[in-house]
Length: 316
Image (tube, rainbow, N blue to C red):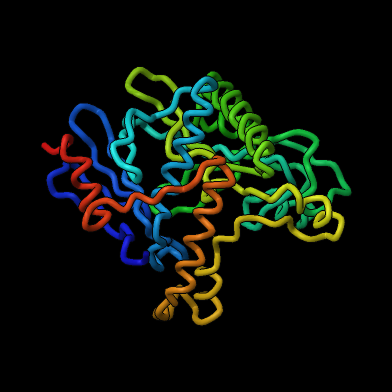
């Protein structure tokens, strides 16, 4: 199946092409945006390889969640002409990324666990109690906003007071984003729990449309934007001071980091078995999260041929 990867999605008949690390976008003159999720795997600020069906898994997982939460807030979806493609409203993305956390977890510099272990108790405008343990459930879900870094910058922690004083959002926008984010997270935790999963934390991106309405954008509750744990493993692992079982998709990243300095050295050839293993993790995540059987789209001579054909109605 390695030959069935969508590594590139350049389609010259479509206008205003923008190539991101993983997604490729085209802006149509009427205000719609074509977003194609490739199978590229990005880490260490480079593309390491491509994972079969990764783009389809992420697009279809987000589709499941967009449909399950459309009663909570509007989203950018207009149509799905292909398993890897969404036609969306073009939005002005707001400069604040919303991360909602239900557990004391994380490994990055902006995670609450990292800050907590450094002795911080006041963070993101929230005070956490003393004596908490790694991966412990928080008294209630909290919003930990960060700056939305563009052009390769780094996200920086924010509080509500900073967001308003820096005029990143208006007070009304902040209230709306907070209400949406907490409601989306509650829905996500409820449905994940019914599938034997814990949605520990996740991030959301919002934008404003031409009417000034706040719209949910990007992706929602996918295994790339969220931390999921296997619920049956939580109590035992927490008691033992261990992380709960999760969808470990970092096989390739760990394999590369163990063999070179990926920021300086050439990347060694990644074994096909490792790529296949990662693909299976993504597929398992889709099936557990949605409760549906994954059906890979094998039509077309290549995935790009299929995408091109399905997008033909949008050609100039």
